Amino acid sequence: MQWFQRATGRVSSRRQVSSPPAAKNPPVPPVNVSDYDYDLPPESIARYPAERRDLSRLLVLDRVSGEVAHRTFRDILELLEPGDLLALNDTRVIPARLIGRAPGGAVVELLLLEPVDGSVWRAIGRPGRRLREGCSIDFGDGVLQATVREVEEDGGRLIELRHEGELLEALDQVGEPPLPPYIGRAAEPLDRERYQTVYAREPGAVAAPTAGLHFTKELLGEVAERGVEIGYVTLHVGVGTFRPVRVERIEDHEMHSEYYEVSEEFARQANTRTGRLVAVGTTVTRTLESSAGEAGQILPGRGRTELFIYPGYRFRAVQAMVTNFHLPRSTLLMMIAAFAGGRERAMAAYQEALERGYRFYSYGDAMMIR
Image 1 (cartoon, helix red, strand yellow):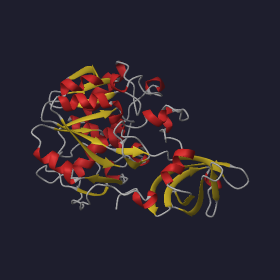
Image 2 (cartoon, rainbow, N blue to C red):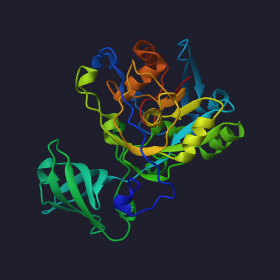
Image 3 (cartoon, rainbow, N blue to C red):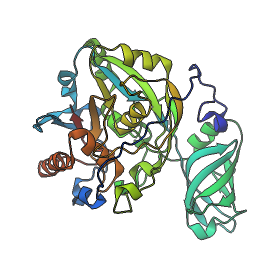
Image 4 (cartoon, rainbow, N blue to C red):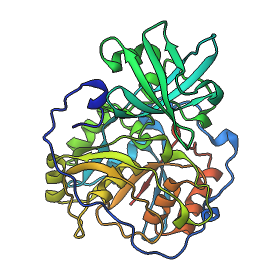
């Protein structure tokens, strides 16, 4: 059953596929999380998207030589080669941020994370003192209602949703795009379009696969005309992706899990390609490495991945990566370092991006590692 069907009743047209064996981290030397810290001036954080998706800047890093070049995102047409397979994450961000009123009129906020069983969802919210078991919350004058069924040990909530018609329709009426807090502003009408890739189709993410935000439909058409194949996988991005690692030793970090799906069609594309497998984003990289066999072949399937990629990891499938610039001490930055050939090379590229005025994080500029 498709991940989101339990809450929405939507039926996917994709064939059912079985889960491949879960990918495992090989033993690697200990890694200190503090080695992935860096100072980011507040003015380097992109609070709004670029005027045009494909006119963001693009830092190009050669993972063999360490050479860095500076381009615009449209130049990716020159960096992709005929026979390459461009792998995109077709997850769709749902308007998961809800602001409503508890009994007595208190304003509360919920962020839906994922469906658990039927109408029950896992969520986080504030203020916590208002969100006790049994509390009922109203969103949009009865469009959507929620009751807190359980307070979990980590502070999360299990909530039961009630609404008329389809859940997605109710969320579209009362929900907002769940912008990351570092953007530092409330969601605006433009975010409903721009905090979403142009090819998003499978609802379920609570954060955008941001590397894909730079593509336009026209640019993807030009990519295909160049002889580059385009394929889609799904990984529903959760908020855990962006959380800093709170421990000092990597091996002490408990990785969040995320739902992914690789279709038989995509596996065929990947296993018959004549060029590189180019992952657009860390979410696609994590999906492909989770579904790769020892020889690098892509196995179709669906399930949850807890794969944690950091320096020392041996990549089995991905040969080039497009990504954004990530938070200090984050698992995403560690993945970039692993793919770039080590911490020193990745951190040097980040420092050069800072010195040249690149814009960081979700609405920021991009990086291609090849």
